Structure formats: C-alpha cells, structure tokens
Image 1 (spheres, helix red, strand yellow):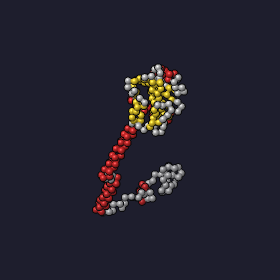
Image 2 (image 1 turned 90 degrees about the horizontal axis):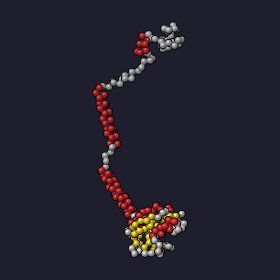
Image 3 (image 1 turned 120 degrees about the vertical axis):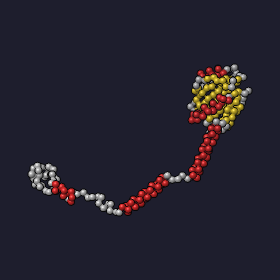
Image 4 (image 1 turned 180 degrees about the vertical axis):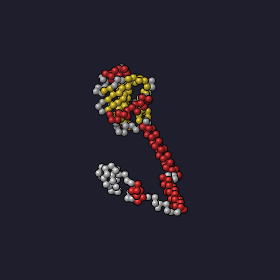
Length: 249
C-alpha cells in the first residue's frame, strides 16, 4: 500500500504516513477486515447476556423487585420508627413539671427580692427589706444592714433649731454640710403630703441616696447607702422607701 500524497510504501495497518504524516485512507477491504475481525474490533459486551430463558429472567426480576421492596421498607421503618406513646407521655409530664417548678422559682425570687416591711424608725415610717437586720452604728438613730453588710438603711436625727428645709438643702448644695462627700444638686419632693429634700452623694468607697426634712424644729435624714460594688442595689430599695416614707409623730 502506498501513500496517496507522497507515494511512500506503507504497512497494511498504518494509520499515518511515516514520511509526510498524512492520514492514510485504507481500502474498503482492509477497513472491512478490521471491522469484522481485526485487532481494533470492539468486543460485544452484550454477547451472552440474554441467553436465559424468558421465564427464568422474569422470575429473577420479580425476586429482585421483592428484595428491593423489602429493603426499602426496612430503611423507611428504621428512619421513621413508630413513636412510643408511653415514652412521649412520660416526657410531656416531666417537661410540664419542670416548667411549673421554674415558674414558681422565678415568682418566689421576685417576691423575695422585693419583699420588705414598713418599719417605724423613731417616728419615721421607712421601708426595710425583710432580709435586713438591725445594727448599731455611731451617728445613726436606727440602722438596718443587709446580710453581707454591703447595703444599709438608716435614720439620722438632730435638733434643727430654727433652720428650714431650704436652708439645709442650700448647705448641702454648697458643700458646707457634707464636707468631703460629693453630692449632686438636691431636689425637693412631696411624699405623703410632706416635703422632703432628695440628694445623691458618693465617696471613694460608697454611694448613697438621702431624704431630708424638718418638722417641729427637728431634722430627719433617711439614708440608703451601699458599697461601690453593690451600688446597683440602691435603686430598688430607694423606690420602695419613696413610696412609704412618712413622719408619724
């Protein structure tokens, strides 16, 4: 066989010309031989696959379908097990009990946190938290302190002579009355028909809210004080005191 382009002699099974590189156009006979029995013939992958009788093939297919159906059923049942009604009921009951206990605990916490008693401190009604106990401390007529001694509620009294509430408030604002204690500008409030001066003060170790009034030539000062790291407890106590503060003699 020769190359049609350059005339070089070629092997019978050559695909490209070794001289010019052209694609070799094989003769119809050679191509047919390659197709029918040559080395390039692709094997028939389907040969022998359908040699079983039709009835046996159908039976085998039915058996395969049944196995697949059983496997699918088992997988479905495993993924979606039938709920256990008794277990669900038990879980529901336990969950309900836990929820009730939590609600009761929260309610009790807030009741206990905000519980207190209006106590007469030498003629002045003052709200005192129930977990506070009476203490003795210099300068206070009456004093109650928290369990950790970090918050106090106390009453200071002294003879006012002829001084008025406005004069005391001016003395506080000017710093004459409080010395090294730093105080914000005082304000005047009416509580249960009685005028009180209110002032917030602080030192390097504590913060305090004070209510001041004058009656029958006597000065009354109710103080709520706390250490700096417990100052957040003052507001809740102060609001209760403000609602119940009253001179009763």
